[in-house]
Length: 92
Image (cartoon, rainbow, N blue to C red; front, side, top):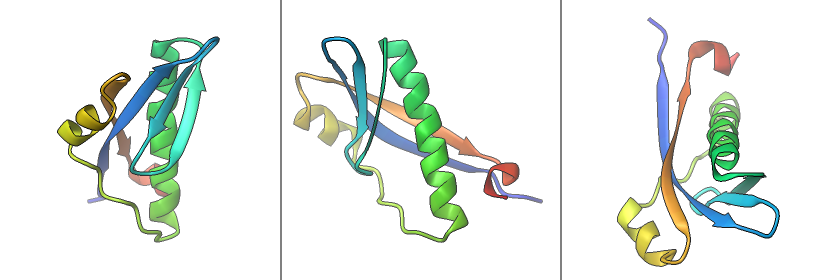
């Protein structure tokens, strides 16, 4: 049976002047959207693409920080956990 992978990483959301920036401190990747909802959806998709690429090419992926550490470190922003499911079709 094919394996399903789940990744869960903390992301930090920051309201800019015209956009919401979503960054994953553990992975060094960032995306943005026009609203928190859009930024969250883009972050979720970006995490899926990032992790599928890393698995396809056997690259190391940093382990996620504890969420409490991210909350403490980014007190004035909005940290959230973002997950990505990878199915066998994503790794072809």
